[in-house]
Amino acid sequence: MIEIPPIDWSVVLQLCIIFGGATALLMADLFIPEVRRRVTGYLALAVLAAAAIAGVAPWGCRGHTFSGTIQIDSFSLVLNWIFMLGAAITIVLSFDYLPRHGINRGEYYVMILFAVGGMMLLAQGADLVVLFLGLELLSITLYALAGFAYPRTTSEEAAMKYLLIGAFATGFLVFGIALVYGATGATNLAQIGAVLAEGRIDGENRIYLMAGAAMTVIGLGYKISLVPFHMWTPDVYEGSPTPITAFMSVAGKAAAFAGMTRFLLTALETQREIWVPILAALAAITIVVGNLGALTQQNVKRMLAYSSIGQAGYILLGPLAASERGTEAMLYYLLAYTLTNLAAFGVLIALEARGEAAWNLSDLGGLWQRSPGLAIAMAIAMLSLAGVPPTAGFVAKFAVFTAAWQAGQAVLVFIGVIVSAIAAFYYLRVVAQIFMSEPTREVEISSDRVLAFGIGLSVIAIVLIGVLPARLLNLI
Image (tube, rainbow, N blue to C red):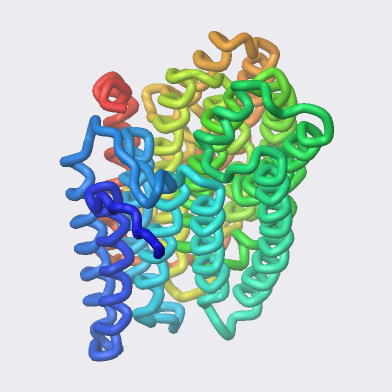
């Protein structure tokens, strides 16, 4: 007789709201006329708001369900809120974008909700199988969203590249999980950690374990865009619809970091002496390659793609610290980066009012004279990415550098600080273009108030949590 384990629905309440709301919205959209597609978007925002409120009650509590494969704690709740915030702002930025580009279809908002569900599984997963399911649900929805601008060739090309690279990464992840299970006899992260703590793994099993752990990190590293698993990022980011580029660059990256942090600090906590030096080297290479790649870009969208690679290296300093302070710094950085990147991409969306790309650096020339609000928003976003006080980006970099320094990663911190100073050039170049250059061609600017609200909300939050970071850090 099969016994069904008891289910604690409070642990999966947010997941139920997201998946249930997405499913209901998928059917409801069939009856919403095309001219009122915004209604679907507003309903999606309501689902996200309901799920966010549902996370207030369990704050400060710990629990697990489904035989310990899904858990809830402060770490997962903060990440879930970051995912939902990123999705909500993405939806707001999309209201004006979709009809302008002739892709105003309701399933767009539904797939964003399903993507958020996959992200939440990565944040709450306490088992390698659940992490795999979350990553695949996230990936499949992002493949479709990357190609959502059909029949635009660049969008289809981006989706195909993302699909092929993603399938390759999935192969690494599945093989890695199989090897870890073969070596330890468990897929539950806590059980794997217990087996390793007892020292029961030796000989061939230890080789299988290390190979499996490496493949699992590689599979997640593709989603994070760690070097050398980053080559897909600039092309996919450039070809995808701009709101989806913003979404995958922040929320998708945060979800992969959630899964990697769970795996490293729960399952492999006793193996720090092995994985810390390896990941430290990857972080250093990622910081250098990402920022140097951005230096040569004239296309702002590709520049932000390379910037996201470099930012991944900085964020990795948090898990590398292998401490509570390092995890807190990573969570703060993910929130700051989410707000900053969405503000920057929001400005690019506003510059596509005619439905044409306005991503060249020269297209930003004279933006201060044409739209002071957008100019200030883009300037604040660039200053935050560069780590200039008093923005959220400065506090985020300071937090991860401090955590890494306390963990003995002095060399990595020096590399990060030096490269940050070099990287400031290409961020400040954008600011100079906005305020000091004349326009080279006529670029129509969107006047949509909802889009302006989304950009303004992000910018205000960037400044607010930069000026008053203590409250947020204490909450985390």
